[in-house]
Image (cartoon, rainbow, N blue to C red; front, side):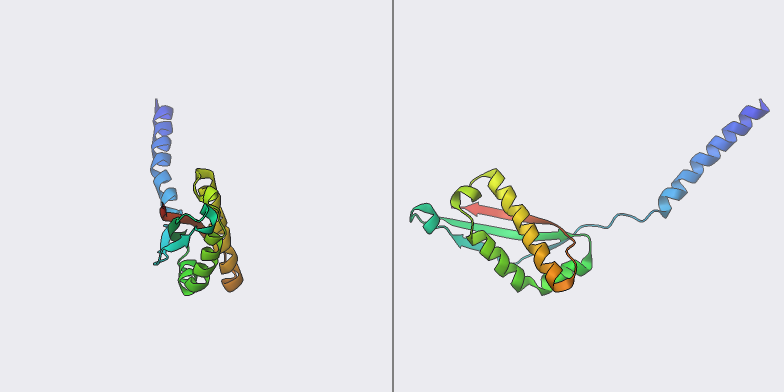
Length: 136
């Protein structure tokens, strides 16, 4: 009986210690967002057999590092220019399909990472979100 009380006591003691270990681990960093203020508006006239077609995309960057978000804000004109060039190079068929939009989102992330790596030495942007995607 005495042995089982000791085992029970040790078990309870070990359970009480577990939350202490969990508190010592750093909390995961929260996501930080940077929205590019102006939407990108692209005219698809030449890609749509001379029919007036427009694409408007709003872009938001996400990272877990405030320094890279600050760098993105500082280099915003360069990012906007590169993204505008990327969006203009797309075809109507590409932006009209889900897989095309996903590929464009991946290409946008790679473009942003490339510019920030060149300008700051860091490329730890985690994602690019299209917060608005309108094709008319």
